[in-house]
Length: 79
Image (cartoon, rainbow, N blue to C red; front, side, top):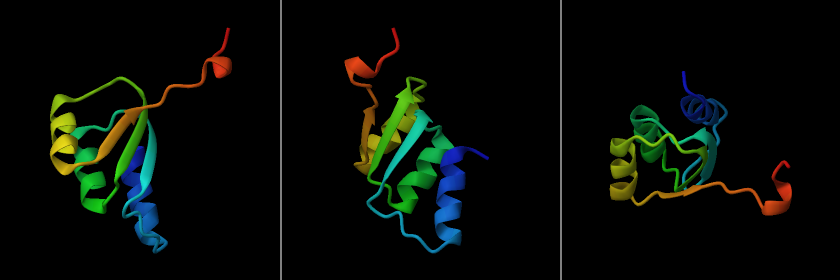
Protein backbone atom coordinates (compact mmCIF):
# COMPACT_ATOMS: atom_id res chain seq x y z
CA UNK A 1 0.00 0.00 0.00
CA UNK A 2 1.26 3.46 -0.87
CA UNK A 3 1.34 6.27 1.70
CA UNK A 4 -1.34 8.24 -0.17
CA UNK A 5 -3.71 5.27 -0.05
CA UNK A 6 -3.04 4.79 3.64
CA UNK A 7 -3.68 8.49 4.37
CA UNK A 8 -7.09 8.38 2.64
CA UNK A 9 -8.05 5.13 4.38
CA UNK A 10 -7.01 6.43 7.80
CA UNK A 11 -8.98 9.64 7.29
CA UNK A 12 -12.07 7.61 6.35
CA UNK A 13 -11.58 5.24 9.28
CA UNK A 14 -11.46 8.12 11.76
CA UNK A 15 -14.25 10.06 10.05
CA UNK A 16 -12.08 12.99 8.94
CA UNK A 17 -13.03 14.66 5.69
CA UNK A 18 -10.12 15.38 3.37
CA UNK A 19 -12.21 17.26 0.83
CA UNK A 20 -10.34 20.40 -0.31
CA UNK A 21 -7.23 19.30 1.58
CA UNK A 22 -3.53 19.44 0.73
CA UNK A 23 -1.42 16.28 0.82
CA UNK A 24 2.37 16.34 1.13
CA UNK A 25 4.16 13.40 -0.49
CA UNK A 26 7.74 12.32 -1.07
CA UNK A 27 7.17 11.35 -4.69
CA UNK A 28 4.76 12.50 -7.36
CA UNK A 29 1.76 10.14 -6.99
CA UNK A 30 1.36 7.10 -9.23
CA UNK A 31 -1.76 6.68 -11.38
CA UNK A 32 -3.59 4.56 -8.79
CA UNK A 33 -2.89 7.04 -5.96
CA UNK A 34 -3.77 9.95 -8.24
CA UNK A 35 -7.22 8.48 -8.90
CA UNK A 36 -7.76 7.88 -5.17
CA UNK A 37 -6.72 11.43 -4.26
CA UNK A 38 -8.92 12.98 -6.96
CA UNK A 39 -11.93 10.91 -5.88
CA UNK A 40 -11.31 11.76 -2.22
CA UNK A 41 -11.51 15.47 -3.05
CA UNK A 42 -7.90 16.46 -2.39
CA UNK A 43 -7.39 19.90 -3.92
CA UNK A 44 -3.59 20.24 -3.75
CA UNK A 45 -0.61 17.89 -3.93
CA UNK A 46 2.83 19.01 -2.80
CA UNK A 47 5.59 16.55 -3.71
CA UNK A 48 9.35 16.51 -3.15
CA UNK A 49 10.92 14.20 -5.72
CA UNK A 50 10.47 14.42 -9.46
CA UNK A 51 9.18 10.94 -10.33
CA UNK A 52 6.35 12.01 -12.63
CA UNK A 53 4.01 9.62 -14.38
CA UNK A 54 2.63 11.35 -17.52
CA UNK A 55 -0.83 9.77 -17.07
CA UNK A 56 -0.96 10.94 -13.45
CA UNK A 57 -0.07 14.46 -14.56
CA UNK A 58 -2.81 14.37 -17.21
CA UNK A 59 -5.46 13.15 -14.75
CA UNK A 60 -4.51 15.85 -12.23
CA UNK A 61 -4.63 18.59 -14.87
CA UNK A 62 -8.06 17.44 -16.07
CA UNK A 63 -9.31 17.26 -12.49
CA UNK A 64 -8.13 20.74 -11.56
CA UNK A 65 -5.97 19.54 -8.67
CA UNK A 66 -3.20 22.05 -7.94
CA UNK A 67 0.22 20.35 -8.00
CA UNK A 68 3.52 21.85 -6.95
CA UNK A 69 6.98 20.65 -6.12
CA UNK A 70 8.34 21.48 -2.68
CA UNK A 71 11.42 23.64 -2.79
CA UNK A 72 13.17 24.25 0.56
CA UNK A 73 14.27 27.81 1.29
CA UNK A 74 17.97 28.35 0.41
CA UNK A 75 18.95 28.69 4.09
CA UNK A 76 17.37 25.30 4.86
CA UNK A 77 19.48 23.38 2.32
CA UNK A 78 22.36 21.32 3.59
CA UNK A 79 25.89 22.52 2.71
